[in-house]
Image (cartoon, rainbow, N blue to C red):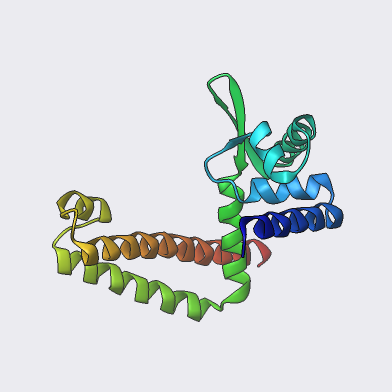
Length: 171
């Protein structure tokens, strides 16, 4: 395929997205994918809206708690609210798993973390990162998995605590 064909496909997809969504929905989708923060101009370009429209919708998302705004030098950058994302994950996990499944998952993740501690004789992924050689591919892969497991363990423990607190409040 030629580059022109790809341009036509991209234009077609953009036109279809624009026709099927409102400007607010497009800004929402872009902010939902934004971890590090983007200016209203960057969001506008990606959401196919004007900069004032992007700024207005970003401010509305900040007011609802879905997004956060930070000053980055002279401009404001917007990103999704990390606390809201975390609470959504905790609620989904609580809704989709039983207490026993959560407990089993927590035990399994703790065993996996102990295995990494024993294998590398360190107490944290950060300590492992300081000790790994740049060309230790398996070590870096294990480091990434260890960090993910530790994060998932924290979320599972929070979901369990949230579930237990909710039960206490309704008892």
